[in-house]
Length: 223
Image (cartoon, rainbow, N blue to C red):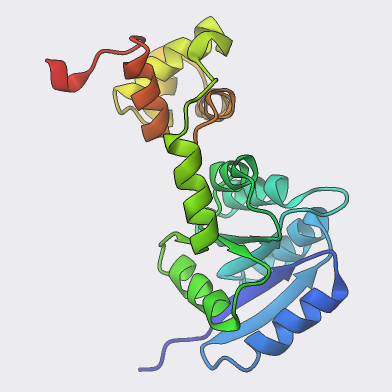
């Protein structure tokens, strides 16, 4: 039985880019463009309308630099409201902080705008399968940022954030952290996001490793 096409929503503030992506994706047999938007707020409104009609997109192609609500904020809002929806970030930039921002916001992939057409399709398919697809140049930049000496330390964290970081290092989920500290899951999630931003890391695992390195949390391997 043939699988239904992947439903794609395109977000970019340049009409020519949206038209180009739509024209290409409409030639791909297993994909269907179901909507487009010029900024983050338009994207949220359009996606909400499709979801309300029972026809949500599967994957959102998201430009990051846009007027009004940018792509990072829109990605965070989309993944928060629609957990089953994947977002693939697209931009002309490879700065590590932008990569971190998009991934922290929940992006399931990161493409440069000069990517070949077949790589765009590959990233969409990977996101639909729940996989993360990174442009090779982006992956190299991210790797360099992770192995480079970090000026960031846990000194920038508040006492509450340090408490949360210890629990993150213990492998607790946001809900488990919330239960442990008697706070809401939303508040726990916000603390974790702030911690990742202040430490300059892209994942809970990296935050946990930093906490162990700085002696904030015990090293499980040492026990």
